[in-house]
Image (tube, rainbow, N blue to C red; front, side):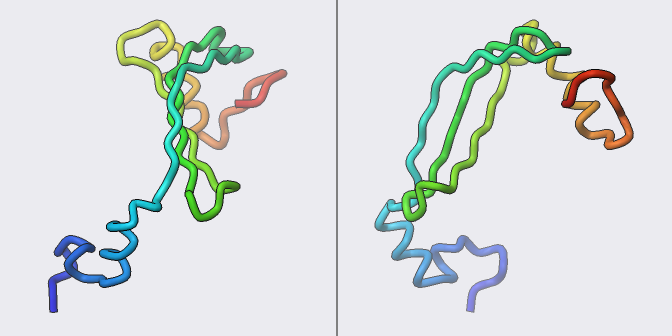
Length: 93
């Protein structure tokens, strides 16, 4: 028996088969330009992962390069999103 901290490939035969098949996900990357009513123009990097077994399931992550004006614009938006009590008149974040 392996400890809980052992890699999944050691603990689970199904995981070893799944991992060996590499039928995990389809990745898509690129650039995306968003215009936010408060944050303004946001040129972002886009990374999407789609589960190969169910193409309707997808995780999309958009990021900005640290130190860029876009990154600086996202910081207050992120703090507002983290505060459920924060309201922005006339827009939704």
